[in-house]
Image (cartoon, rainbow over all chains, first blue to last red; front, top):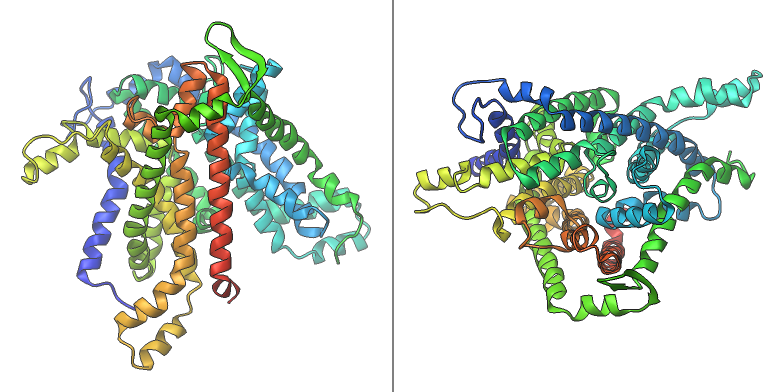
Length: 264
Length: 287
């Protein structure tokens, strides 16, 4: 085990600064009392946090994204859980292909997905529908949900299930009262990771969002592409705080290192 | 005790397969077909098929420049992520107890924060009166503000910030597999710490560095938000070019062709490089 020399520690400090600086500056600027971006800020003001309340479009986009994420993450884990059981408990022909198919959205650039969904919606006349936009999110977040449930299902012993069956419980009872609770950490972790991914998704959604189906990242992207004012920084500060809370929850639930590095 | 009923796995994964077939396979096929349509500025998408869109991408210097710029930028970002991220990961692994976990989290947490927020931070930092320029002026490094927004330098810095966590994750995973006993063996056999690091530790990290590079390169090549917000209209990359064809110029067939080229290039890079890395380092993966 080696120790870090002072030079290494100095580099480490600079690296941390590099990682944190853009986030810190967004939060700092959000507390400005002025009508424009200024840094360093003089004095603390909650003016721009109050302004979020009056920004109807942003508020609507926030609730739209929250609803979209809730439904999409739920559908994703509902689809991913039986699929994960199929992939862990059965050795069937085409198993590798099925797994690769479910993981493929990670390999496809999100711009390509956006273009493909735009064309699909255009031909099928589905533009501007909540349900169909939600399904595009299910595709994008499915790999995350599946990976988390898979890792829970892989390590799961089937003894309890077999005990339940031999004691006369029906298959449905065993599934609902034994299998699902045992997989719960993976399902909940997968759900939260999926929700975050859906809530943050920009590149694909920017193609298919309409004025009636505007997500928060797309609304913020359009706002920033037009003008940068303290309003977007205060919204960003709220998002950073919200993400931190979710991260702490995820850490409690499954361990953040496992979620991010993918190995437990 | 594997269940042998052949229909069961298909029934269990059926709902997800159905969603993926309608929502992924069908749209991608439709886009591939779309890229072969003729586009006419007056009448829109024609029912005539052609390879003209692909020819245009591969012969028109405008599109070649965009693809060239994207490849160059992704290569620079990848190299910077290796040069900056690998030493940092090693330093973190040598930190003590709690700091190790905290510092790793600080680097990985931004992955969960919207890329729009991170890019916004950089555009505030990089403005002509931004913090970065104030700092450079105060330190006397430059005499007048450096132009960073809408330049390749600015986009590259922000892209490294977005991508470097992926490199850290990849190198971290291979560091965890390292057996400290091998290092100790080298040391006890009389090798200097420097030699042990160069000849024992680094070679074992190489697969992690390479797979991290593949991820970073592929993600950089298809990045949208950062180049769009910091690069503006002039510094177009493949992703922003495809976006513009679809939503500004409305030449969908050409946009679809750009998307298809990006998709195929991406799959070739990821699958091709992964296969090469696995073949080259089979011994490392098996150990």
